[in-house]
Figure 1: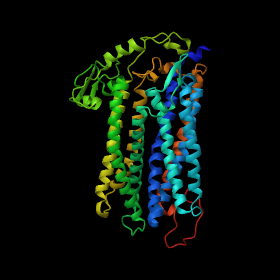
Figure 2: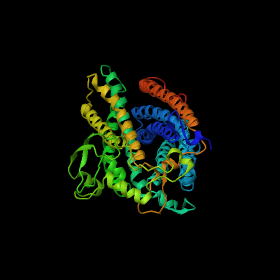
Figure 3: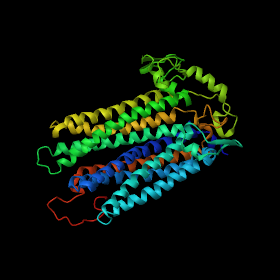
Figure 4: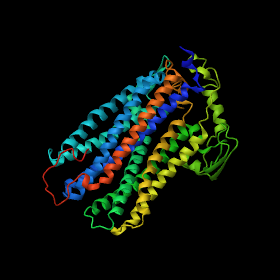
Length: 504
């Protein structure tokens, strides 16, 4: 092993580069996942209305939003494949540790995503005017449900990293003993509905923003497609509001699990330095949050609210960062093992405190952007009540800008979830099998140099930036085209057009 492999290049550590690489690619990929989950079901509902009523407006809605869904789905597939390559290239030690557990859920995800979802989506694309209406409808529902099922297997794998179950420790590595325990992990059962609800918030506000722009653009004309945009806006608004309510409920369930499974993450989310009973919920923190001991952090709090969020009552004790550090040192060690693969961290003290600014503000930005998305959806529902179309130029601006809010909320939630369990890549289960945990510093590939990590990081960032520009261009182009981009004017021939005309 070369010195460069375990050392640094220009003061940059290989572990940090590997983490940045995975973070950038994961966050970018995760921008597409919730939109695909939510929008696929929304399109299926629209087509169900088409089959039941035969109305042209539902045909227009199905094809217009279906086109945008397909663009997003294609980019999601392309960017998702890179994740699995990174397990082998940058995180081979991690892959060897979790491989026996992850093999099953990741194989299930591959079968569902690349066989069921992609097959039925292909049948849906090519089946217009060729398959019977109800069979064609069944294809989009199969693809939409498979999309959610695919997400479940990924959530189950990630939840095992947060709360390992269903394994025994053999020769220092976890061996799977129950795939059912992995798939029914309490963490997965609460994380999945939370993720799906987040997807529906994204899809709902996506409909609201684009529909608001089209309504405003055609406000002075006798627009025959006005009912398309009015229907889509109001449908999206109600979807966004209902999904945010589901987000709040599932988020509360996750908070109670976090209290018992990952107490350091909860303390870091609140910048709670010392144990409190009852514990207040921090609205705003100020002071030097960069210090790991959090002694210089002061918070403006709502008394006893954190105790309620943690355990459902207003008196529960919530442990703070300082006593938890001592507990973690006693249970998991005060120093990293002496191992050349750990490089500069070999034998050094373990920092059990996550980066407080990231966890504290990530948690609040997640909630804040989600609430902003729901508030915008409610506002748009109010402004368009009884068929009204606001004439103010701020109407489409607010709608379009709000599209970013749920995307940002989902991203900050994911960042909080992943950074909050540091320094573990596989967090210990307080009531699980002893020894089933892994430090992030131990997970990086020992045979990959810092220079190679930097090269791949720069290359992937450039490629992903290019893909982002391409997707943004395609979505804007097809969104601006409106109904005319997917359907001929109503007075033209009703003969079938190119089956792929709406898809490209």
